[in-house]
Amino acid sequence: MTDSRDRAWLAAMVFAVLLAQVLLYPGVDRLVGALGATTDLDASMWFLAAEFAAFVAFAGVWGAASDRAGRRTPFIAAGALGGSAGYLALALLPGFTALSFESVLVVRAAQGAATIGAFSLAMTMLMDLEGGHGRNMAAAGAAIGGGTALGAPLGGQLYEVGPFVPLYLASALLAAVAVLALAVDDRAPAGDRDSIARAVANLRGTPTLAVPYAFGFLDRLTAGFFALVGTLYFRSAFELGPGATGLMLALFFAPFALLQYPMGILSDRVGRTAPIVAGSACYGLVVIGVGRAPTVELAGLGMLAVGILGALMSPATMALVSDLADERERGVAMAGFNIFGSLGFLAGVVVGGGVASAYGYPEAFLVAGGLEILVAAATLPVFLRLDIGRTATFAE
Image (cartoon, rainbow, N blue to C red; front, side, top):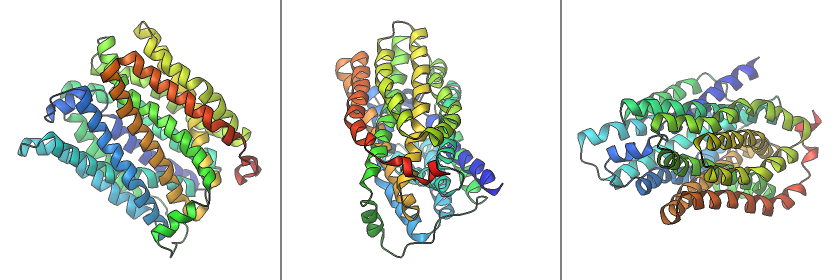
C-alpha cells in the first residue's frame, strides 16, 4: 500500500509541474507582449526556449547531486520552491521595474533551472518504486499527459481574465509540490561517494540508453512544436482565441493522458519494441497531416490521433530507461532522458518557429513530421537489436 500511495503522490507532483508549465502555452503571444516583447512568433519562441535551455543545462546537475547524496526529496522541495519564486517573479517584476525583455528571459531561464529539479527527480522517485517499470512510468506519463491536457484549456481560459493570471497559478502549484515532496518516503539508493563527474562517466558504460533518449527527443520535439507553432497556427489559420486554442491542444493531451497507464501496463506484458515501433511508424505522418488539414474539425481529429500514438510510445520509452539503467545511477539516467527531451522540445520550438517564420506553417509541419520519421527510421534498427526481453520487468 505504501508503494501505491507514494506512486499517487509522486504522480500528483509530476502532474502539478506540467500543469504549471502548460498553463502558459495557449496565450503565450499575449504573455510575452505584456512582458515587453514587440513581436509574437520570435518573442514567444525565445520565451519557451529559455526555459528548456535551462532544463538541458541543469537536469544532469540535479540528478547527479541526488544520486551522490542518496536523497531525492530535499532536492525536489528546493527545485519546486525555486520554480515557484521564478513564476511569481515573472508576474510581479514588470509592475515594479521596467525590465527589458532580455531580462525577462534571464528570469525565465532561472525559473526553468529550478523547475527541472522538481520534475526530473519526481520521475526518478517513481523509478525507485517497486511494482514494474512500465506501471511506474505509466503513472508518470499519465501525470504528464493529465497536466498538459488540463493545462491547455485551463490556461486558455485564464488568459481571458488577464495575461499574468496563469503565472500566479503556476507559482502556487510549484509551492504545493514542495509541500507534497515531504509526504513521500525517500527510497533513493545509498549515496555514491564518487564524484558527480564519475557518476556521469559510469553512465557512459550503458550506451544503449541512447535509444530511449533518441525517442524521448522525438516525442518532445513535437510537443515543443505544438506548444509554439501549433498554438499560433490554430490562432491564425482558424481564427481561434486562447480558449479555443487551449481546447485544440487538449485534443492531443487528453488521450495522451488517459491512455498512458494502460499502455504502460501493456508494455510490461509485450515488451518495449512493439509499442515504440508501431507508434513511431505513424506519428510523423499524422503530424504532417495536421498542417495540411483544410478545416478545424479535421485538424482536431489529427490532434486526437497524435495523442493516441503518443500515449502508445511514451510509457514504453520511459520504462526502457528504467530497464537499462543501474539502480544507483537512475537519477543521472532520468536526467539524461529529460535533457534529451528538453533538447527535443527546444528543437521543436526553435526549428519549428524558424521554419514557420521563413516559409510558413504547412512547411513547418512538414519539417517536424519529417524529422520524426527520419530519426525514427535511423534509430529503429539499433533499437531492434537491443536484448531487452531479459530485463527483470518482463521476468516478473
